Length: 230
Image 1: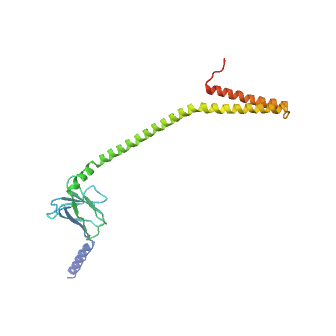
Image 2: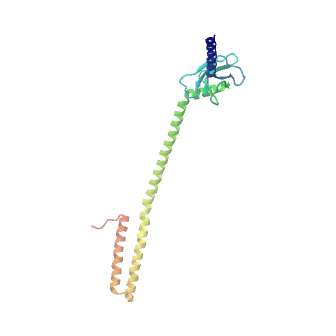
């Protein structure tokens, strides 16, 4: 009798322990309806994925006649819910990690007029990005080539202008220097005649200035393109 009581007590404790250990699932539910008319979508496939693993759904179910769906999920995770309507697959994510016994309501309002744009973005989004990127790159390259051409044209024009103007400006400068030197020689000669400077200083001044005059004459001929006499 005692053994039977002990066995019964152990069985009750084991059952209570398993109930305590058992984890209660969370639940994700909601309605899928037309965003304008409120008409429920029946037999729409709902798939639920763990947010960090989209390799396979953790569960799937079809909406009933009222557009309602419900799926149990493990607690402690975020989930992404997809409404499979064909080319367009609206999705939502739970706003927090699920907890034991928690109920998470995620409703979907579908709009027929947005279907085309969603299809385009989902099916052709990659190619749209490629084309736009190509156009932007082409515009940048064209702008670079155009700017470089303008810059080269500007340099060429100003270089030619400078080349044409430079001899005239240099000749004027040389003529001015020549006149100054000749004036200095005349002034030195006048001072020598007045005995304000001695003969040696006068000859030294004239000799130095004559060298400068020869250099100026050579530079002037070079700018004018004159040939030296053979």
